[in-house]
Image (cartoon, rainbow, N blue to C red; front, side, top):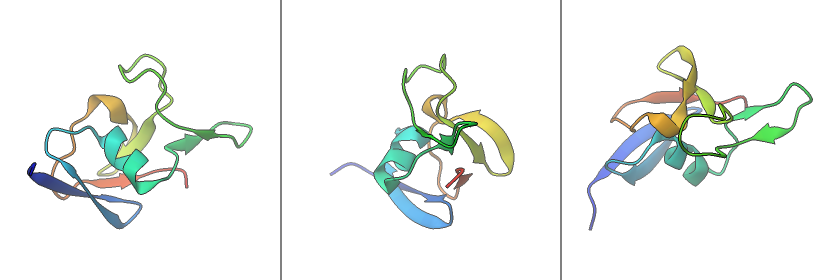
Length: 81
C-alpha cells in the first residue's frame, strides 16, 4: 500500500499517493482547477507546465501550475470553484 499525503482542496481534505502532483489531488477531488474568462471549467491538459490550464492558488500564492508541484502534507489549495 502506498504512503499517503493529505492536502486540502477548497477546504476539503484529499489523500493522494506520496509523490503525486497537486493536479492529481485536484482531479481526485472531482473539481476543475479554474474557469476561463468565458466561464468554462479548465483542468490539466498537457501535464508538463506548458498550457497553464492547471493553475491554482497554493498556500496563498496564486497562479501555481498544479501539474508541476508535488503535493505536501498540509498544503492549502484553492481553485476557482
